[in-house]
Length: 384
Image 1 (tube, rainbow, N blue to C red):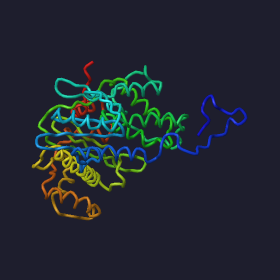
Image 2: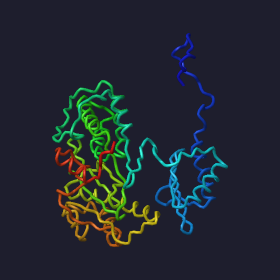
Image 3: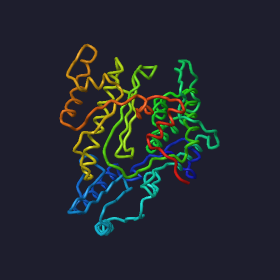
């Protein structure tokens, strides 16, 4: 450990302290805390969710309680106030519990109650990122990434402060929890954290300028029909450096966006059909997990979950047991999709490229197209 300020040995200012015992507790302390808390909850009648190990569920007669744990931050909700109060008294007999009432802030995410539901926002966190980058007073940009991106020259100058780049890029990744409109740009920026260049930093500043102009945007949670639907897209050979494709998908529960992903594919796809097919496989995995989760929340889904794709060749490949030289190497993904289509858990339907919402998660777009898809993602401005 470095010598703390005020206790530096003047004869050996560069020396460090040897710790004979950790000053912040044992490495197993968080695990033991989690084990003790969940053991008590299980005594009360809770059980672990099969889909999420941090979620515990209590279903007894008509009582439904949900207990979500993240380290020492806890969310508790349910339909029976008497049972909730009994649980809190039970926990207070074992822990020093601070009850903060109605949720307003969780893991840095502001949760605002509205007339139609809730609104998730990270405007304070976004403002702090701008201040750390020295861009609190910068001009706004209409999109998070320039529509026409050029390949980076091999002799581009390395950025002078890579630590600042990594700090801001990591913070932007957390900001995308409530801002899927910046997910693609943040993903692109984070791919260069090992050796950022001046050009990469210019892309980072462009994203920060967009955030400056959209500080109060967030994600609403509103009531709806509670039916899952997913949109899937891929940008074939999008990365000019390694020619790997970008997969993107987003899933709605009714009108609420609940899951999305932007990820570079692990292997090079030999065709746009293969790239789209890999995206379909990744989206199907997420849909199957979400179906299990919502069923545990007492929301049954007897009908197949619709996955919308704009590539007719990929849909045909999922529907017909035909292999040829261009597709025989993706047989495992094929069997995975076919099995769940046959069992009635998912269905793949065609959608026009114009209406493909996941397009915003796979490529840079012009301002008009970006704003249209951002509205379809249901990202809205906080009423201030």
